[in-house]
Amino acid sequence: MIDISVVVPLLNEAESLPELHAWIKRVMNERGYSYEVIFVDDGSTDDSWAVIERLRAENPEVKGIKFRRNYGKSPGLHCGFARTQGKVVITMDADLQDSPDEIPELYRMVTEEGYDLVSGWKRKRYDPILSKNLPSKLFNATARRLSGIKLHDFNCGLKAYRREVVENIELYNDMHRYIPYLAKTAGFGRIGEKVVQHQARKYGTSKFGISRFFHGYLDLLTLWFISRFGRKPMHFFGLLGSGMFLIGFLALAVVLVNKLTAIISHTQAPLVTDRPYFFIALVAMVIGTQLFLTGFIGEMMSRQASDRNNYTIEKEI
Image (cartoon, rainbow, N blue to C red):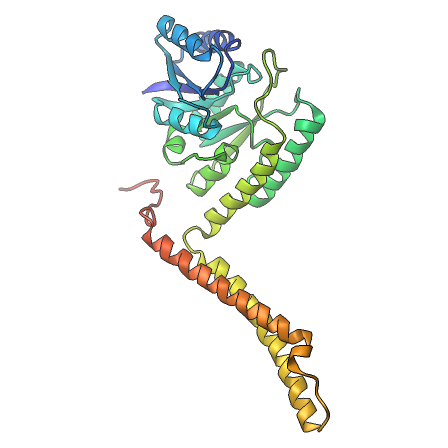
């Protein structure tokens, strides 16, 4: 097993790849690390793959993966993780905004301080304020609140992982934003943070638009629900269903009491259907039934899942 695996997902970054590789190589050789660099070409339409092939021919530590089309950053990281051999895995973006000079300290924090995962924090950013900085702050505040992980920058591409972490998490869709959350739910709770240098983009343009923040919130809610109720959906839907049933029964009780009071007092009572409580009771009980049925279906699907008894075992003697 080598010391460090560097995984670099990329899309149309042909200009920056030679400079990035030379920078990584200089840092690794200065520290005497054994290492590999895995470039994952996410369906680039420029000369990125030709550059990777040339780097591979000249440098045995370079490896490359090329997707037939663009799938996204998460699939790129997933395939890169599956091919790593290092005891510490470093991820970084290919646009030269992440500094390879941060690698030695990230490596030390994992190997000496015992962190499972160390995430970079770009305290000083060189991104547009309205399109990236402000939305990023709001997004990270929400992620901290829901995940309980006190990180300032969940989406920083520069991270270091203990090998066991990347072997026990699965990335799909756009879940690369929530790798710390995935690691926590997999049982890797020692998550640290390091202030890292952020550099202005030297070549090309950003591949991510403002829509990623809207998608990010939806992914965060999905991940929160799955991590909390993925194995016990009835605990969520059953609770909501019980609440709706309670509201329905209370509204029905009001209707019945008003009707009985009118009968006992021999007064002309309005029709039951003329009272709003009747419709509240009807709608609430129907929704409560639907929520209970959803919970039952979720429980049946959960019990049929092949990984229902997969638990992370840290040690066994």
